[in-house]
Length: 148
Image (tube, rainbow, N blue to C red; front, top):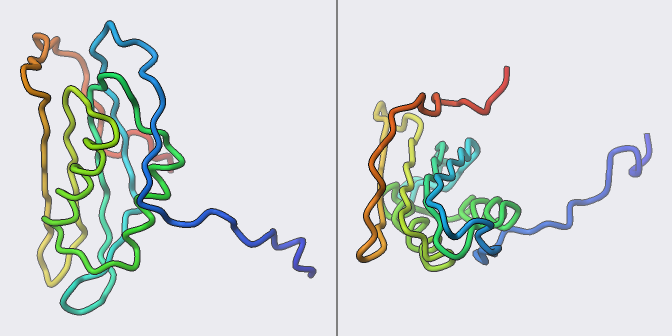
């Protein structure tokens, strides 16, 4: 087997840079829902890996987050010691700084550590923004985009 048959060395590297693109419909509030099932960081006390699913829900204003940069950003925490509460709020702060959304919620559902599951939810609302009245439709199911 040759090195070529195994594929090339990946060129992407983790980064804290979040790229954006222009909101394609600034006249309408619309909900963007993302699930990031492979988030990892390190326990700041033991150095052992922590695993989480990060749910990102937001209503954009002028900009949306670009997916490749979001993936590389999430990857950037892999070798960092992070308390669950701190990293969830850091992700929200960085995404809000990059996109300036009308509304954003980051939900981090960490897998068990020491017999305890931890869920952390952090939210941002743009000053003066009010949500439109809710229309009850089916919600995104947990792991709705995961096949298997």
